[in-house]
Length: 213
Length: 213
Image 1 (cartoon, rainbow over the protein chains, first blue to last red):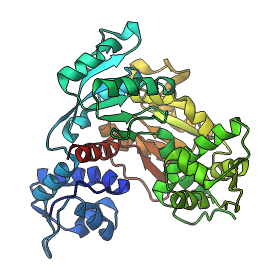
Image 2 (image 1 turned 180 degrees about the horizontal axis):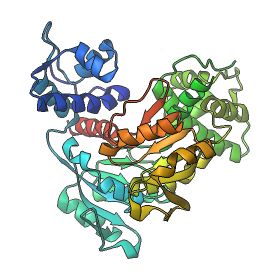
Image 3 (image 1 turned 135 degrees about the vertical axis):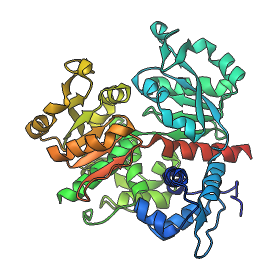
């Protein structure tokens, strides 16, 4: 019944888990106790086979004629993603994208807390962005050590991204969340997750071509 | 040899196309004329079967012992994504995320030009963000008609996103690029592409759990 931590789960399935979680948390707040696959499928516009496969990753199995217990399913997804506890992160690059991410309220309910922010520009040091004080890059190693932050969020321009990633790794970060368009080279033991806006634009553009035909 | 426009191509494959494009444009700038699947696989750390399948979507087929012609492959990918011509977009929500997107240089080389930006806050109207003048929401219908913009970029908070999407659709937009965490309800003939940071966070968190075990 438990998720197998040694497996490589399909990325598209993992990416869909927050979608289920959002629906389930809403149902919980309405006092619902159970949910069928059919109901999830109708609410989210996904196929039932897909949903069963996605949820099975977390180790949970639905019961015939009952479906899933909402509470158990929330727990299973949160445990699978490590969101039952909060993981601390530091952010480098307090420009507009960095500021947007510092102000993103949803992260707190998804296991992420940004505990420090850094920038290379002297005029930004000491300022507060969304309640977080911007520190000089030189303070990064000490602050990562002090806070035990495990995630480094990179919101600098492409040309600075590799150097920033290396500073983060040297400071002890275990995962890099890269919002820059750069392709980062990091040791294999590190986790890198890229948010590349152009990859999403490709999907949008291709579908826009299709409706034109 | 041509891509079949009536097909639904797998999203993960479409999302990978910009990655190939980046590599190919770099090779072209170095004067390379042909590229093998093996070389692409080594450069990007992907499997050969996957690469062949992804590229076949665009209608191109590699030649034995030659591979792909770099120039032809770039054209095939750009045509498939509609990036041989520029598509105009308008942006709603000139906060920090909107500003970051207005300043994102990479979009121009990926078929996207942002021609106007709007915000509901009176104090932002008339200001320039990254060279684009912020206009009042009331001007949206006329400007979309004037510019022929087909993509609407939504960078407003979740609670305002549905209303903004509806204004964009009413103004004649064909595709919504949604950067808010909201799930938008739009008519089926519209294209919606969501950039949900928490979906990416799920992938990062789950992989971070795995290296901990």
